[in-house]
Length: 356
Image (cartoon, rainbow, N blue to C red; front, side, top):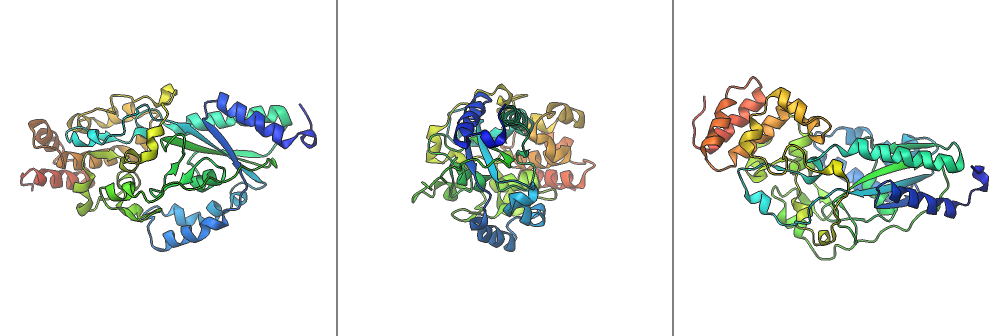
């Protein structure tokens, strides 16, 4: 182990990139912590209340814009990405199977947060073995971090019109993670934008959540409605949700850059409990215990059983009027949760059934 002062930053970064690849990351980039260029966009977005009930976005605004406030001593951010798609299919065909639940690709397997955080911790340990003790903190979508802005600055891709990070060689089906550090590593050049005149993602949004390029009104976004929103889903947005019961992938499925999607080699991302092809009616009949058991270690767990039933009720309201669909809704018509009852009764009315 060398003394920090004797370490060549360029050589160290070469080693770090190699270690990151060995740990399953497809790319690692380095950026400084100046996010001032993103402040006007964030402030305007918050001022228009496009964050809806995600009050933490406003509450931790200063921390998002200044990584050194979030973790004192931070000089650089190591930004990493990890592919998660297990399919090269970019069609919207699954959304036409109205009797089946559509769950966003990222949430079908095990929760990525712990997996990536463990890998980042192992990366930090390898760095420590080379340079000795150093300051760092790992983040994976778990703190006030402008991760896409940092990833763009670190050269991992550009923030597309759909607000997703897009990479020219890999599309957008990947997770991001960050290692804040006090090591004065050389920084990478930021990525340039390559959306051009394409507006496919803006045009296809089922709920018209995009106010314009790079500008999302989260209050209309299906990912927000099915995950972040804890109360009643606005009635005018329920029918456009179709069979999407946890998240939404439309703006990625339609993106031309995803023709470069790379298949993930991570076994933990494989679908569990047939969540990539389950009947809405079957999922709706899960008991609370079944939900807890089958969402263990899953990102779906965070919405809770009540939110799960609420979302599925909307999907069933948009499904064909079949006997399994009607019977499933009837079984929850008098559910103890007022939130679930409201959405079930709406769904039954969609099928022409009067509720009391």
